[in-house]
Length: 306
Ligand SMILES: Cc1cc2nc3c(=O)[nH]c(=O)nc-3n(C[C@H](O)[C@H](O)[C@H](O)COP(=O)(O)O)c2cc1C
Image 1 (cartoon, helix red, strand yellow):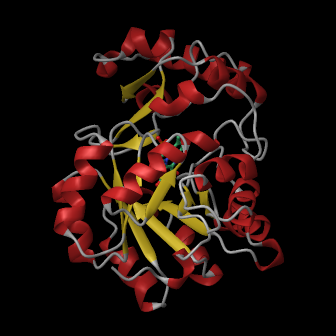
Image 2 (cartoon, helix red, strand yellow):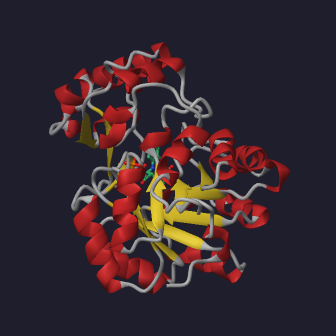
């Protein structure tokens, strides 16, 4: 396994792209602390936003990555053009038809990654020539598959590819990172553990909901409520609130009244209704920390002196 130069970070840890909380400030802080931070780009963002956040993430020549959603590029190709211009150290393109974008990125000499949640996904990633595979289990926060948990998925993927593999989903601290490194992963791809960081771009009410959360749920409730055009095969893992419990399993019955209630709650920061995407590890978020503290905690997985 040959690790691309950009990924030879002091701590084998990538701050996962997280549309919403994961902007330039968080990416910059993760990279400065010894990992590689990524900017998460939601489907609604334009090229100007990406350039602004890249400026923050990459200040003082700091390395950073950008995470795109493949399905969003079909209607918003300017996102890819902006990233091609910016030339970040790593570009992930996940969820949808990414073969074309990956080809363009690789032709431009950029290092690419994609998140896989099944062995079919792995086969597609290899066929597309993606440089770095992220084995993302169903414990993970935000969108993805919920078919396999991180540990079985990681073992299956490592047995079948020679490409560098990062493990994602449910890595809370140095113990999780040590476990996946021992299994043969190149590092951890971590989102939720950074959600309570002072550098994250989430609102105070969302942060309170994260600190209070004791359980997550997986499904399409919040996408249907927002009419977000996510492909049906990718649900999301979020803090399980009363609204989620009410509608999970009957998302297709969500009507305009329920959507209106959801919109009002988002506006008001009422997280008994509004969503907060997070993985199972959210129960470990008990106080605000800096990204440097979180990276230092993960770095305890490394041998002393490294
Ligand atoms: C709030 C949130 C937003 C996310 N947004 C994105 C995104 O924009 N693009 C992406 O590829 N993955 C996204 N993800 C998934 C992460 O990249 C990653 O797979 C996940 O956080 C790993 O599991 P963990 O949360 O248990 O650490 C998001 C995750 C969270 C928690």
